[in-house]
Length: 477
Image (spheres, rainbow, N blue to C red):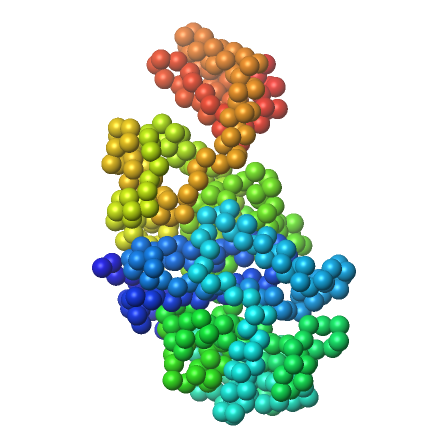
């Protein structure tokens, strides 16, 4: 069996992955708070852990992996959005949950086995909080229940590498008068009549953010499970607090054994932010006719533990590569691959790259080597089918995108004008006359307009590329 190595945030080492039960490999990943569209940074952990999910299913078997990703549907941001929009909380969370699922499906992400909503697990949260109070790890104060960090002081901060004293010294925490320690965090808080609330031993209220993941993970995966993942912005305080309350509530278990965190996303070398004008959602890109597989390609080209820089050049490179894949599929694949054929034909070097701490950048390099071999081989050959089995394994399921259909329609309409044929003839005439200055100028003009040009001894051929802009051809008339 393939050995998977993962960098465990908790130990700060790359470790051999050994699941508690190979027949039920269990993974929990923190999901979105559903009050708005998912931005591009929200999508990165979805794609990262989708790749890990696919790898685990490949190694251990599809039926032997359980993947849980939650939806936070009770939160102050949701309450604020409802208040400002005049819509109900239920309408907002239902709509944005479906938005998220649709957008992530467009990126090629498989749906997890369980997608619990926080509001479905309030009784489990209340029970866990009651247990923490009984064990001396939490206390009630003015309608709130708080986790007592001092009760877990020896262990608190080990995931993020911080000591409690250092955290207190550097904290920008609004210290409520009822807190025993500035670092104590809320497990339950009171709700006014205009806010969502549930009955509890401490009055009508709602859960704090951190308790939901602990309660849902325990309910669906048990006292101990294999992998917990998320963006590194969640390492502290969210994941730190999850560990504290889970290990105190269920000391017989280990909670999560391997912790994986992806790095953040940048845009053209800068942090994505609305103030810089470089903030956009996945939906924004899809509406701009940037297909989900292009976004996925750019994500996978960078290792998950390195900052991912979204640039227009990377996007354009991804478009060109996927266009080449599509052309090979249309020319070289007679019949679609069946699931068992995909499993058997996936390239072992790509699997090996992913098994080394999800080295997707190396996997994409290996994939390029596979493509080179495939396009030089016979139609429907083993090499061709192995290439398409491998890209399907990596989540590139549908190369016949709406964008490619629109591009074909544009090409068909534009070809009737004869302008492209005329320019290509002019290139050929210039080359016959050895007027390479004119030939190169015309060729460069076509390329600048997004036309894929191929010049050989037999003549000039062209095809509209994914970035074709007919307006730029005006200068060539």
